[in-house]
Image 1 (cartoon, rainbow, N blue to C red):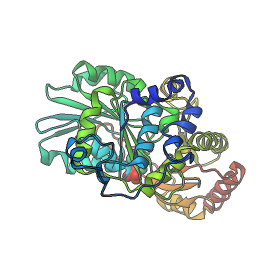
Image 2 (tube, rainbow, N blue to C red):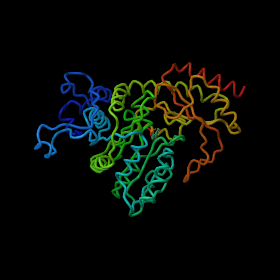
Image 3 (tube, rainbow, N blue to C red):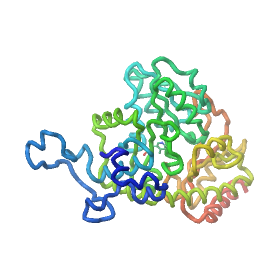
Image 4 (tube, helix red, strand yellow):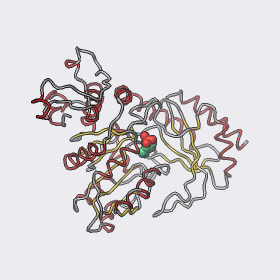
Length: 399
Ligand SMILES: *Cc1c(COP(=O)(O)O)cnc(C)c1O
C-alpha cells in the first residue's frame, strides 16, 4: 500500500490541492485500469505468481486477497491523502475500526484514558474486552484539556478522544490533550465521525489514529457498514501490523461503495450543514425546546473550540425538551414525525430521529439533567419540509 510520500511523488501537484480537488482525484489511477475513471471491484482470495522465485521473494504487489487488492488500496490511499496520514487501514464497521485502533496501541499492563463522552459501544468494548487482556481503562472529563496530565500514570500509553461527544455534543480541546499525551509518548486516538475528514483533520491537531465510522458520511447512503483508521507516521507501523495479524478485511463491493460515497462527501456535507443550520435556527425559538446541542451555534459552550479546530459542521445535532416534559410526550413527538425516520446510525441522505436520555450515561461527569432529549440527523430533504414536519409533531404533542 503506498504511503503518503509515494502518493505525493506519483502526483506531486496533490501537495497543493484543496480538499475538494483531493476528493475527486485521491486514490485514482485510471492509467492502470485501461483508463476507466474508477478502479475495478476486485473479488479475490488467490493471487497467482509468474514463477516460484517471485512467489518466495514476497515482492509482488499483491499476494493474497486478505492483504489487499486494487479496490481496497484505492480507498486507503484516498483517505491517507485526505487525512494527511502515513497510512490507512479499513475495518468492517466503525466500531471494528475503534477496536483495532485501540488494540494497536495498548498491551497488558497499560493504562488507557477514554473520554467520558465516547460513543456507547466504544465504552462497551473498553469495559468488556480490555480488562481481560490486562489493560486498565479510565474515563476522563471531556472538558479536561491539558489537565489530563494529572491522570497520567507511568503505564499510560493511549488517550482516546471524540468530538463532539456522543449524544451530548461537548467539544474537546484535542490539540491540548494531544500535546500533553505526546510528552509521555502516549498514542492519541480520535473518533472523528461527526466532522468527517472534510471538516476536521485530526492528524493536523496532533492525533495519531484518526478513526471514521465510514458507515456514516463516507458511505453516505445508509447501505454499507465500513470503518477507517488513518495513522500518523509514529502510529502507522503498529496499526498496519495489528490489522494484518487480526485478518482484518473488508469486502470489495462495500469498499467500492465507500469510494463512490467519498467522491461526493464534500457537496453532501455542505448541504447537511446548511439544512441543519436552517432547521436549528427555527427550532431554537420553539416553545417546549430547552436547549440545542450543536457546536456550530454561537450559543454552544463548545463553539470557540469548534471554530478553532473544525472547518464546518455536519447534520447531527440534538435538543433537550424543557424540564417537565414526560417520556410519553417525547415518544408522542417522535411517533408524530413523518419525514424523520426512527432509526439508528446516521450520515445517509435522509433525516432521522432517536430518543435520548442523558441521565446516567456518564461516569466521570454525570449528566444528571433529568431531561428528555432527541438526537436528529438532518438529511438532504428541503429544510422547509423538515421544519414543517417538526412543527406539526410539536403541535400534535404539546397542542
Ligand atoms: C456510528 C458510530 C460509530 C460506529 O460505527 P458503526 O459503523 O456503526 O460500527 C462510531 N463512532 C461514532 C461517533 C458513531 O456515530
